[in-house]
Figure: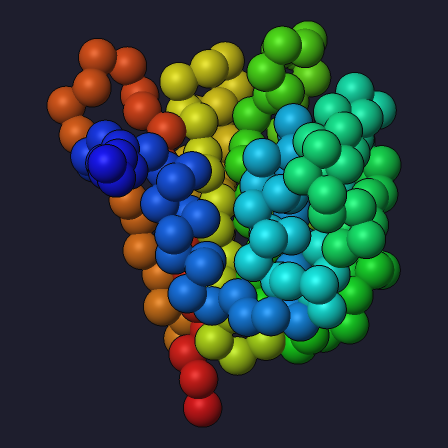
Length: 197
């Protein structure tokens, strides 16, 4: 008897939607960036996408996040594909050349299970987004999951959304995906891709 795989709950959560969309722009051997390594879920996803010949650059300012992400990557058997940097994602342009990156993921907010007062900040997030836009190759994808429901999250989410709107004015394809009618502000995904040619 063959068991059917469980169907995903719809609509998809922003993190699952981000992964599904980025899977379409990442190929074997690519260079990709996890701008907020956190507990390593996105890091592992990216490492699986790029295959044995690809590379993931993973950033986080918290030692606890780097340790958790490294353990998750190790458990998945993907250590050789990932390089970790305990530094701000605003520094990612010192680790990759312009036009060489297939995808960049941001999962904003705080590290689950740790001090919620330590979270991504609008200023460095916007710096990181500028870096990402310069590093992405044509047709590459930029995914940012915003969390407006926690203290400080709404301010950051609004700043990021304004930045994406300006990116659209520069000729990028930009979209926003999120739930409607929730009791508190729900997480949402902002996605951008630089048009080819």
